[in-house]
Image (cartoon, rainbow, N blue to C red):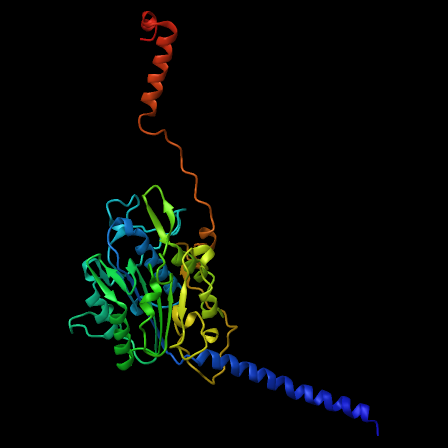
Length: 389
């Protein structure tokens, strides 16, 4: 009996059996990763706590994150946006109704469809805590409520001026790290979230998550205790910085993320190292039950797609009929549709700022004429002055 042939046949049979099993395991692993978070909906609470023109960058920070989460699928109905000041309509703004996050002035993060839920003096510590805990008056509209449940993944982003253990609101009040920790505990006890991602861009930001004690919370900060979070992108035309360093590089990272991206939280932890930020970004994961490497960025910055499962066979090759229109002569015309060209944001971020047209400074022409006259008097004397006029 030829054992070599028998062994070859056995190996082939084993190979044919193992390939479907390996593929099945691969599919199960991917499906398990997709459903591991257990959430069915996404929410975002984005807060800028600073007023006044010199804090322009804090508004731009918040609007940049707002733009990113909307691009990745979270609708306005699931975003609570709180802006303490309206930089787009500030009288110092040389380009009204715009807020830019880059000095090339091509990426307007204010956009045409920004829905601000709390603005101006509505942005207070009390209103922020009421939004988180759901303790709002019955007259509060749905657009100002965080209508989350125990299957909700929530992104909370804060930016402003802070210190060791506190964050200022409107330069008139502050929220402490213990108050914030207690608010998150109330949310957990009231089953208002499944998992929560907390990001703060402020000086000594890591002090704000030191007191957290509720489960399923992951936290990131732009600076450690004792460090300042630095600004970025100064614009001499308007006299302020356009963004903070940490959020600038966070936005740059998010521009490479798409709804089907496999980027995970470990990739987010590498955003803006000390060589770029000068400050030392920090993160805390001990309260989070899952491995950060298995948590996709889109678990918090994106939105869960609702899927209807069917056993019916659906033909995907049938072309969609174009709408028909009849012209004045009676001939049928086909109306064609095309996609609008999208703004190449990734390219805009890396562009160099445009060279501005040079204009002589105030008094330059007058000074030039004065110099000409002085040279003339020095050379010819006052008796030849009649030749000029």
